[in-house]
Length: 145
Length: 109
Image 1 (cartoon, chains in turn yellow, orange):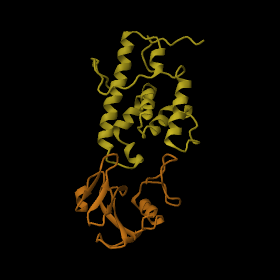
Image 2: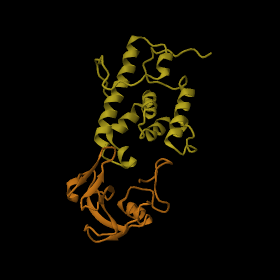
Image 3: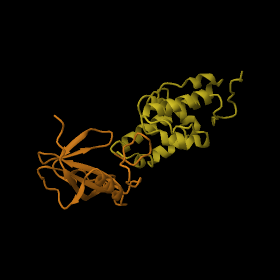
Image 4: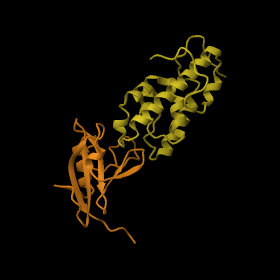
């Protein structure tokens, strides 16, 4: 993956920042990296929605190269996926399951979209201090209580 | 209607849970449709055209309206009406492979 060497000052598609974003002590360069992830997700998701919006079957939508690249952004993109889900986007569950792997929550009890969103939101809220970010080593995490 | 990847997706019990066009034909059969030979307008019947991609997967389904036009739901986009079935042919949708019909169910008054 090639991330931009210069970081745009205006995000392509500004998304609400997850609360976990503010809970990590990061310096200005890592701030730029996180904005780069946010912008990269925005670019990929907008293009993916444009390219697959005409499809009705989820199994066809999620094999698009942009969707797979979003999965490749791994844990860094989870807060943005959950934020998008909470705004009504319904196709991010396969990506979340692929990223979370064995750590995914048990969402089999969720019989509606709203229940599934709450399950994943609660799961992420509980994990936000333990999730791994692929930032450079200069990132320091908040000390646990 | 689509093969279940989430619990809230509607997919008739008994139809294979994959995106092969034959699975969608079985799903439509479970909903009362039967294969038929053409796209002509028949009074008293709902008629659909089922599209298949080059790989044999389901691509799209269009519904015949009482006025003779076809209605298509374009995924997350707006529904459209079109005069001929080839107007929505596309690599992602494929081409028409099957026609199916079922007796029209009167809407409750």
